[in-house]
Amino acid sequence: MYNKYKIFTWGCQMNEDDSAQIDALLRSRGMTPTDLDEEADVAVLVTCSVREKPENKAKSKLGELKIIKESRPHMIIGVCGCMAQREGKRLRRGRPYIDFVIGTAGIGELPVVLDRIEGERGFRTVLDLPTDAGGELPLPARVSNPKPALKEFVPIMYGCNNFCAYCVVPYVRGRERSRRPEDIVNEIKYLAERGTEEVTLLGQNVNSYGATADFDTDFADLLAMVNDVEGIERVRFTTSHPKDLSDRVIKAMAELPKVCEHIHLAVQSGDDDTLKAMNRGYTADRLRERIGALRAVVPDVAVTTDFLIGFPGETEEGLERTLAFAEEIRFDGAFMFSYNIIPGTAAEKMTGHMTMPEKNRRLERLIEIQNRITCEINRSRVGDVFEVLVDGASKDGDMVSGFTRQNKIVNFPGSKDLIGRLVKVKITEGRLFGFMGEMI
View (cartoon, rainbow, N blue to C red):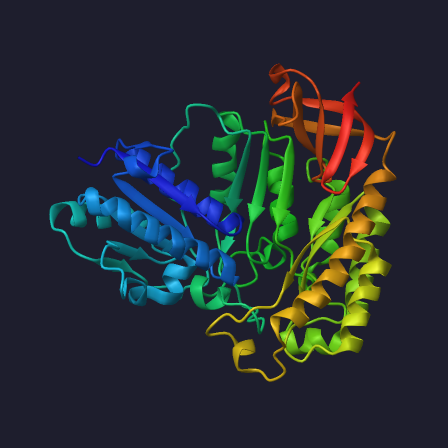
């Protein structure tokens, strides 16, 4: 009866990897994916709680699935991920059609949960978070896709110990736990053998990899180990907390040939008072020093970031300092958001919350500055030649697209035969979202 499934995903790369693991588990049961909601015997929503918009999208999709289930009562609907962990059994209030809620650490229990629901209908939950900071943290066994994956995400750690005032991650993903380096390397070797050329190492704060573990390998050591895996051409990582960006990691980025010249440092603000209120653990001067140290030894590095504008208590002077910081540092790109309240975080109880129109006014000023800088940087690269890993056909006619080592997309004329190849591309046009080019 349960033959087809569909997975819905919102949020960050950690959620994308959660979805990949769920996909592997469902395929191992002999099920096949479907693109049609109304064909799914099992529908799984992988949810995010970092911002309000992804949660609203997930709850809207639940309403759509409810209508489908009314005509297909055997359908199983489940919620996984951060929103599932945060709300738990509360998610089912007013939604009796939900069959299971599995938190961030319980994905491996999905087959058992489905067996119990199929055998005896009833609501199931798996919501416990682990307390052990180290030890064995294996992923569910991956199954081969019909086509080898060119690029893969590989989690190296779970959870977070930072407790930033605006963030719910430590509460929904637990304390920091690092996977053993040999497990990570073995997984990447397996991926390389099936055709993967690029891996992105994932963690809430990859720079603190191994800090709470019972082994001595740190993130710089791990980068060196992954760099040595035969068949892997590129190594990326995300996300890096600025306070933990060490000289050893910077040195590894400069010296390891497969580690790409791109780093995402989520600075959030350029104002010291706001950074202190956020509990970020660094100052604007510390950010300047770390980014300067990185650019000094990796001169072609692209630095991208996150900005969170309108945090409770942010003054006009604080905003001006953040805008000036963006002008000074000149990030290659940025994800820019206005602050919204996440229940259960320290910021929820702070004073100084501002209206949404005011937050949006401030955000628009930053967006205008950063978009201009991004365009200026990209246009300055016209005529330069980049190595591009071609990963698909472009939406623009007879074109293909891929990413530079600096993680910037390039669209250029070419056939689909180029997919999976590393090619040299000369940039002919710089745009806000990347480049146009021609292969040489």
